[in-house]
Image (cartoon, rainbow, N blue to C red; front, side, top):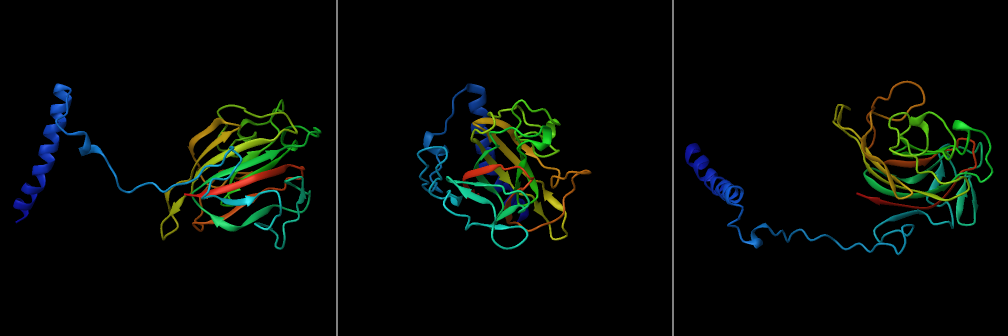
Length: 253
């Protein structure tokens, strides 16, 4: 029975291989065009925004400039950042804020602006950060004519990946990140079975191309994964500089 089953299983495979060989040897396929058409599943319809800042129809709007209801302080309680002119701005000493909802794999659009008045240099100039799953930082920094360590400048995956180019606009100008994030996967024993990956487009320029994260982004030492939940909040950092954010939306993938 096993030989018979194997024999009949191989027949369509052998026929297909013969057709493929015929195609490669004679440059012409005997398959009709319909043989390679796939009709199911049919992609669902998503209505895109009219501008890059607009959220598509299936996105979760995390901040539209009107309130901070989707956010809370990482220290507990309400988010205490300033709200003005459709933007929220870090208030030094109030602490980082995070979304009330957790996320894993996602597409994230976020706009940010460093202060128009330049104060400080290096890491002390317009510093903040976007932490995917509260652990993996895409650096926010005024890197316009402001030298610092390359794996800590704007659009770096902090201390892990240098951006391909510096696409920063001048201080006081709104900038955009469009981020595609694949969350890490852990087995039941807490071991990594798939690392995290991230792609970052900064002001329309690809700066991180599906790079592999080696663990949470840390200031001191080497990164190392520790198992965590599949969905965790998105966090924005209070680094003491009045960095502003607006037009934040996310699509769960």
